[in-house]
Image 1 (cartoon, helix red, strand yellow):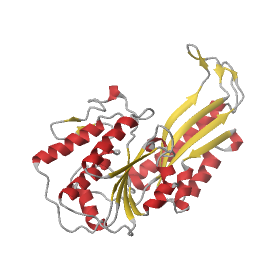
Image 2: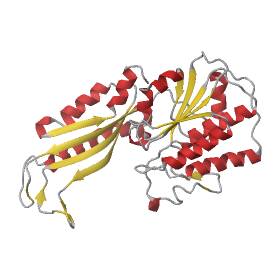
Image 3: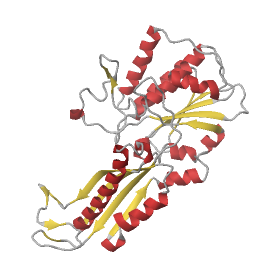
Length: 341
């Protein structure tokens, strides 16, 4: 909360510091955060209805203007507004997303949607960092500013968008392309950030671009007892090994202290789809004609993306080995090029 108050000091022309919250107010802040965390908004079936109701209830308690938009049915986007005193000034948008990634209950010490607090004050919950903590920091900062009697000159918008964890195509992307966004007259956007593990706040001035790469290999099907050249699985494994070596070369730079984690290209395999299904599992004596693998790639802003595109086309998924590939999320990059985001 303190962090966003400091940011507001410069963005909203606010100079008088707000008093520190009392112990009772601190407890209420944590309680509201826990309530948000306990709403299961994990993909692929997030409870958007409940999270929307929660956000709207907070907005009502703060006398904020509210708007709920569904560019795609079942994926509500909540926009809150604190009108400024000078409506001609460009506005500020604070964005966060309501959905979270899935969790494996058996791998958690505490329930991923229980919001358990341990003896050190740590809160365990899916979304506690990515990124319900930031959304609640926005709300609590607004609460304290309003309690102090502050009135912003610029209008302040808070957006809570759906489906960020699966690409954001039906939420933020459609908002950015809409007349709603144009009419907001946004001058600056503060987006995703993470909770700090200590009392130091880290500022991020660059963001790695996410590329979701899907590589597909094809080959002639064959009996499991035969040896074939250029089978789908053989070709895919060659690609996986090439990607593994590249990943290791990047990771070695981090391990050696030569580069930070955000300065290298990270590649992690997300799925492997291969085999011919049968009623009892898979057909074990058949070499399949297709095999796929998916990779989550993050590219630093300092890296030329064309270098990676060439590597994918020539080394990781060459057509000469009956390979093809798709890179998702490219539409987001074109949005930036066109000046929409």
